[in-house]
Every structure is written in structure tokens, then in C-alpha cells.
Length: 310
Picture 1 (tube, rainbow, N blue to C red):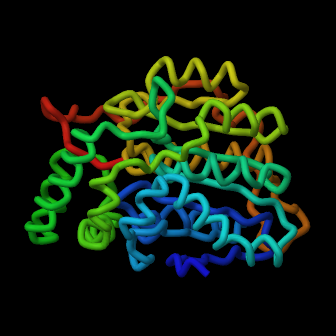
Picture 2 (cartoon, rainbow, N blue to C red):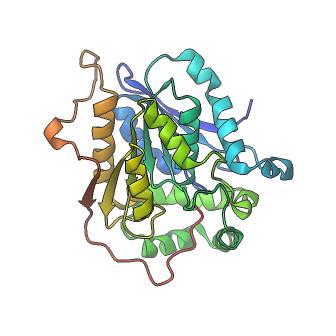
């Protein structure tokens, strides 16, 4: 038993499948609730899993960190899913943002014969391919998180709203709480990318016929043009939301939901005979991938940006 904190949202009507959602570093399932509720309303049983060191999940120890944090995160999630997979034969979908996206791809590759689709929001993958974070970056992220902890929640929200003016208000309180709930030792370590190279993971998934969609933005994102080219060469789809940052789901929530809905409708269709089944997205309305979609014009981030632990 890993004791990871989880959040279940049941589908309305007969479930079309189970969707596993993994937040990024220093985030939480609670901070994703508007999107998780949207997907449960679209017919998925949704399970949000907070990795070790997040929300009320167990903390990190020096021994666990020495085993490479990204790999421990994956093993924890797989152990948490054991009971879920035994009890369910419905389609299985994985979603992850940032470091959660890196973990979601690694988990999906380990469960490749059970997974029906993988959706990743600007996953934290590096080029050249490596599982290690630069220690000055990790130290800066730790310092930024410590600074936030010295602020009142209202001041945290005021600062983040100035930097990310498009973030919806219904996620801000939960986001501010994550500043206190995140294990600083994990942020200081920084090595949250699984050790199996991300290019190998994506190739394993697409070779097995698992559709992979990466949604990214154009402002201070983890995905570069080189990332996008490699992903497409490996058989993954990429959708670029112009004007969005690393946090596409918050900068452009309706558009992100539309892109995700089209992807899920294409690969995990709802049962039209099920009571409460959602309508399939019409083929003509589906955002095509690879593609680019604009968001409402936004204020660019200030020079130097924001020291954000991903």
C-alpha cells in the first residue's frame, strides 16, 4: 500500500472508461477539479492521484530520493492502480500535466496492453533526453516555493494572477494551498522525470497502437519546436495553443476541454445507448492534430518570467 491521496469522481450514467489524472510538481488533484469534473460529466470515472510529496500523500525520505524520484513516483502510481485494474475492464485513459505528464507516459508504457489513450499537457521532458534536472533550476524552484510559503494565501493569489491573468478563479484557492502541501525535499531534488527515456516511452506506446496527444502552448513552455518534431516523428499527435503558457488547461480552459473531448471521443467513444451518455463531437468540429489554435490575446509574462517548479 502506497497511501497516495486519491480523488474519485464517478461518471454520470454508464462509464465509457476510467481516466487517471496526474498533476504536475507542486500541484494537486484538487487544483484540477474543474477539468476532472468536466471529464466525469463526459462519461468517465475519473481518478486523480496525488504523487508522493503532494497534497496528503506520504512524504519523501532520503532513501527514496536516492532511488531516483521519477521512478519511485511511477512505481507508487502503479501500486495504487493495482486494485483499480483488477476491478475494471473498461477502457483506460491517462492524463498528466508537466511532471505528471512524464509520469503518465511512463505508467502508460508499463500498462501498454491495458491503455486506450494518453493525453499529455506540456509534459516535463528535456532535450537532450535525460532523467535529471539541473540543480541550479531545482534550487531556484525550492527557493521560490519557500518564498511563497512566507506569503499569505491571498498574496500568493494576487501574485499569480498578475503573472497568469487568464487563470480561472475557481482553481486559485486550491493552487495556493499546494504551496504549503508540497514536500520541499522533492522540489529541491528535482529529478522527477522517469529514467526510461521519453522518446522510448512514446515509441513504445505508438508502436503498440496507443494514441498519444500532447497539448502545448507557445509562451514559456516545456515543449520546444524540436520536442514537437520528435513527437510527431514518433507517431504522436501535437496540438499547439498559441498564446498559452505551460498551463494550457488554465490559460484556455474551454479550448483545452474541446481538444481533449475530441481526442477522447475519437478513441474512447461513449456508448450511445447508455443513459446520460454524452454526445460525440462531430467530426467537423474536432480540432485536428498536429494543429495550432489561438487563445484570447493575453499579457505576456514579465521579463525573467516566473520561477516555476514543473
